[in-house]
Image (cartoon, rainbow, N blue to C red; front, side, top):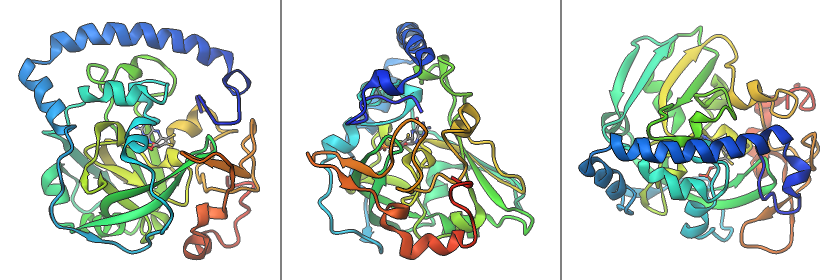
Amino acid sequence: MLIRKAPDVRYSEVTPKSFYVRRREFIAAAAAAAVGAAAAFSPAGTGRARAQGARAKLPNVRKGPFGTDEKLNSFADISGYNNYYEFGADKDDPARNAHRLVTRPWTIRVDGLVKSPASYDIDSFIKPHPLEERIYRLRCVEAWSMVIPWVGFPLADVIKRLDPLPSARFVEFTTLNDAKQMPGVRVPVLDWPYVEGLRIDEAMHPLAILAVGLYGEVLPNQNGSPIRLVVPWKYGFKSIKSIVRIRFTDQQPRTAWNVANAREYGFYSNVNPTVDHPRWSQATERRLGEFFRRKTLMFNGYGDQVASLYSGMDLRKYY
Ligand code: MTE
């Protein structure tokens, strides 16, 4: 992964030279996109995108299960220190650039091995699902972590409603890929669009959610508005943002980071302190806002709930 500011690792130690070069390309592309975006958006369109980023409260959010009582990270940390490469490679780029993302109208296509392939307007997609607050740890592969009060609903409920065929063994998610709104996709850091996937039994696990908010409010664009995945026992890169497509398949999906670098990013991506990333240790992490490092927990501390999904599997091989 294109690593910046992993707390105890210097950029030069972890970042291949090609990424330095690409970063220069990115800056050039971002400048070009800014000109393009200014031309492409009407003032009304820009205003709408900004207004959505303007902290709207979500109604009727009930307390969900599985909450941790650890100290929450601040809204400023959660919405200001992000990975969203479609908006840039630095941690503060998404907060600076993601206001360009227009999140309404928004359509999610559901296809592949499913009874009724269809396209859904985002609000009708969300509507059947009561909103819950789920306080989860997010552990990034770059060895930092946060505690985030998400608002969302179980992915399992969505999958039951979409009714995949019995032959579906995996579910694949895709992020929007629009260079007019997302300057980062002009740079070939990944083979865009961003794609992630889960085995169906992982996706049906009650901890996995689709999030539409945090801190009781609509998800900031930089956190993956209008809808993103949250899989708390896996490294953060599995938690794909701004989803436009959900596809059921009998083949293991070709996920974006795995395609980019299979040695460093496996399909499973379970948080595992005993399997180091080839370029740094995964044994400890830095919680944003804390000085001392803490030990990383197996499955990010959710082992009691999820370990049985992987019984009999060699997690060194299936990393
Ligand atoms: N989804 C998309 N589409 N693009 C991305 O670059 N980054 C991932 C994940 N989802 C990413 C993405 C990574 S590496 C992490 S750690 C989390 O988003 C970060 O989520 P957050 O910024 O809301 O904390």
